[in-house]
Structures are given as structure tokens and as C-alpha cells.
Length: 162
Image (cartoon, rainbow, N blue to C red; front, side, top):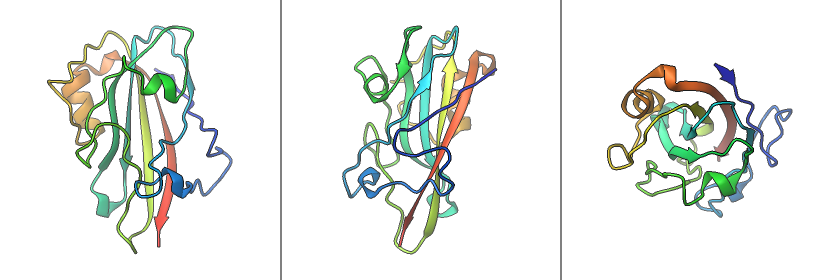
């Protein structure tokens, strides 16, 4: 399996705190954090899930895209991730697309992780599975065969709501 390196022009991998700007939060702009990665050979699609791993959040889904269209020369960025050819599922806010961090006041630092999967020959029918409870749910109910995951990577960031 190929290890995918995910980068962001907004958050340096060398930044140990990886605290995001408020413009990426639900209440202050709700912009999706800019991400990019290189194409994995033989991948026919990608899937991207963002989850809040803080115990109080109970695996809150901030983004669920079970299908991102690929072409072999793509370098991925927001325009391909959210293209009309992608299948975008519901987040835990009950909305389609990105829902930025909005942790309860005083709940401390929250850890968010983008999980990226390079998939080979996975058919995604959003009507079967437009919502996702966690990564395991996605693999079991959408991918169905772990051997079809040919690459994966994660990108972690944090947000603290005082």
C-alpha cells in the first residue's frame, strides 16, 4: 500500500501545533483547509473524510467525500476535491460538504484528522451510503474489500475554542 503525503499551503507540516486559523471554523467563514497530494498509480478514485477525534465530539464528521474523480496527471487541490464529478456525502451537521470546527466553549484542544484513501475499482453509489459514522463504517459499507484500498494518508490539525 502506498503512503500518501498530504500537504496544506495553510498549515506547515513543520508547525508542531498545527492550530488552524478561525477562517476555517464553522462560525468564521467555514472555508475548507487547502489540501493537496500527488496521484497514486493505479488509483481510480479517492475518498476523503475529516473527523474530530476529541472524546466529547464522538467522531464528529466534518467532511465526507466517498468519491473523488481522478485522472493520472492530477495534483489534487480544492477544485478537484469539490468538483461536480465528486460524490459529496453529509457531514455530522446534516449538510453536504465541509463543516468547519465548532467545538463547545471550554472543551479544550480538539484534534481533527483528514483520512485519505486511494481506491482501485470501487463503485460508489451515494444513495446507498450518503452518511458515514467513522472510518471503519466507510471501509465496511462503501469499500467493502480492504484490498481495493491501494494507498492512504492522514493530515492532522487542531483547534481550541476558549
